Amino acid sequence: MVHDLSQDVTAAANGQHTPRQAVAGLTPPQVAEAMIREVWPSVRSVSAGIASLSARLMRSVVLAPLGWMLNSLLFFRKFAPFLCQRYTLTNRRLMVRRGWKPVPVQELPLTDIDDVRLLADSYDPFYRSGDLYVLSGGKEAMKLSAVPEPESFRQAILNAVKAWGGPDKLKGPFVPASAPDKT
Image (cartoon, rainbow, N blue to C red; front, side, top):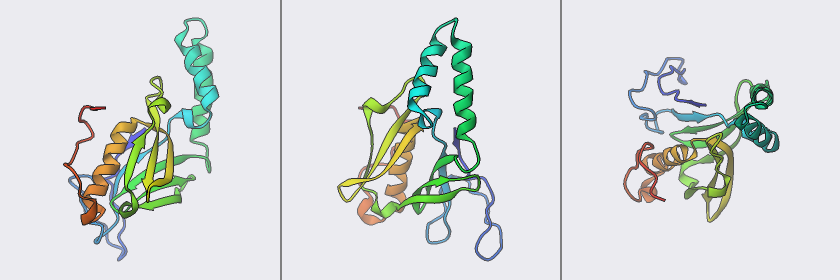
């Protein structure tokens, strides 16, 4: 589930409401932190084994209802209070947030991100999700599991790093998330 909160009105530090953004993440990080994109992991992140079994059952005609039932249990567990997780990209940082009222449990400033990689063997075509590895200082700083539309979210992170990560991060052209994959 992808939710773009750029049009939501947020309270600023002085109690005033910041105006809605015409383009997601257009607010400079020096002015305020603006959400660029938020992604909820797919049900595969809850239990990869059960999600795989559910996908196999749904491909059959007779056992499909059992597969849908298993998938619905995983779906409701994904949104259970204090268990739900989301990946949030702002103009300042990339965060893993948890809970009913999301609190960052892991974060990485955009200035520290060197690269974002998608593991090809982690991609699940049934759920259209994959794992992203965020690299910082030559090693893995953060793993985002079961990201829906992972290549699109990867490009959003890289574009945010190029735009807001500082002058040393401006390498290469801006690549829209809808661009065809050349790998």
